[in-house]
Image (tube, rainbow, N blue to C red; front, side, top):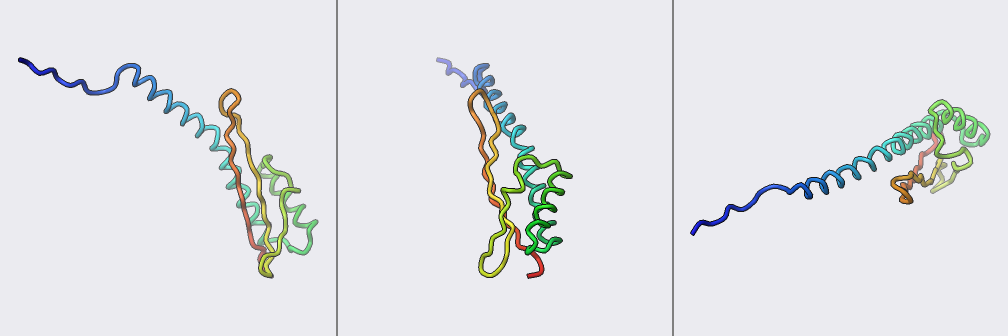
Length: 122
């Protein structure tokens, strides 16, 4: 009596499903990369403004934020979304926002960010 050899590997249907899952993950990555690049730009903008601008002059902070956001082509947030908060005697430039990216049909990817940068020279 001969024993059957066990099959190894994926069937055609298995490969199709694997490629579909891989494609969905790759598509999510392609959609989210610009969101994270914009987040890194916002981090550098906040660091630059917090180190260069006097935190007591709110108009100067807003002007600097607006100028930096225009140069870096940041459109996910507005200058009004930034807040100057005092925590434990120190002033911070804070930003909380969500970014929604269309993914597939009526499915969206939602990413939320919370950023905080201390002002220098307090």
